Amino acid sequence: MLSILVLLVTGFAWRSVDSLRSNIATAGGLGLGGAADGAVDILMVGTDSRTDAHGNALSPAELASLNAGEEVASNTDTIVLIRVPNDGSSATAISIPRDSYVEVPGIGMSKINAAYGATKENKRLELVEQGVTDADAESQATEAGREALIDSVANLTGITVDHYAEVGLLGFVLLTDAVGGVAVCLNNPVQEPLSGANFPAGEQNLSGSQALSFVRQRHDLPRGDLDRIVRQQVFMASLVRSVLSAKTLSNPGKLGQLSTAVQRSVTLDSDWDILQFATRLQDLAGGKVKFETIPAVDINATTDYGESIVQVDPAAVKKYVAGLLADGNSAEANAEDSDAPAVDPSTVTVDVANDSGIDGLANGVAGSLTALGYVDGTIGNYEGASISASRIQAADVDSDAARAVSAALGGLQITADDTLSADTVRVVLANDYAGPGSGQAATAETVAPESGTAVPEAPAAPIDAGSVGPMCVN
Image (tube, rainbow, N blue to C red; front, side, top):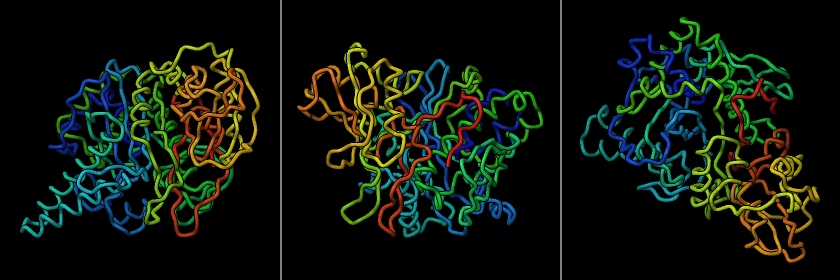
């Protein structure tokens, strides 16, 4: 799934590949487009499919390279919304955690990664009972699953999805190999048999099957799925750098290999002329690709019946996603939000208190605010009652200072604390924080939920594909 970005940022280089347009798999009837909001919005989905994009079974060797077990499902554990401004000058890839608890049409509240698979299976059973052939039932059910996921993402983010792209596990391996592997960097050596991850510490170049193990590992990591999210973000950034390098774009052999990989593994909506669209993305060769994640209210939430979920606030998500259309980092974009008051940051002192258990998080957030001109206050651990959601504290919840700091950090809730002076606000950070400065948390630890429950995937820090070299991670 992660490597489908290859398609979006290098499609203009495939004009010489005549067969790409006619041989790529397509999906129709998805109810896409229809809203002009200043950007082309692309929903990219990664599935656990054990077939290629045309429904053909994978060979035993290909299945072995996936190291993904034999369970067959229609999970969409990777969901990314890409916003490309109409001028094609940049792209922001926004990850949606798989455990986000959202309204799914026809099902109700559910984890978003079940929207596709649950809807598909319900529809398939309904059609089979009506006497529809297995092949037709599978096709119609798949379309229904895709539509349900598209609608769920649109309802959560407030974005009308214009185009849809889907890729299975095989695509990740093929596209990574097509660019000659991707560079990553590990803080420590890892050896974890469930994912197949077996790597030394330090910088290294991974092949497709190795890379799949790298981004799928969550066991034996200090923060479980939290560290896996960070791995996926930095891998995507490194992949984009590899694809945009002259060694790839000027190599006919590599471009041909990319084209073949896409034809086997990628499904696009039938109304999308990818080659025409890609001609608008030439400015992306400058590395103007960023990776973000939607904000969460509580990454360790549970339902009434004990299911582990990521709690999200659709209103906050809509505001956050809309603010990412402008190029630039999250702090700058949010600081310029139309709802944020104009204040002189040099007149505002910001204390930052860490209640997350993540080492270095307070320093990272304080640094991001200092870069915007705010005055450093006290930085340290939070001494009040433990909280589950990050927030801003101020003597006056309606003060311009509190609202400006909240906007700079992604729209955090503001609460009252009359012990603070009028020119000071306090940022209290919980485990859910994923805004500016959270990149400092990449080597931190967190406490897993009780045995038997999954660790929800928390939002990762923004990653810039234009940076030089891979960031070292757990």
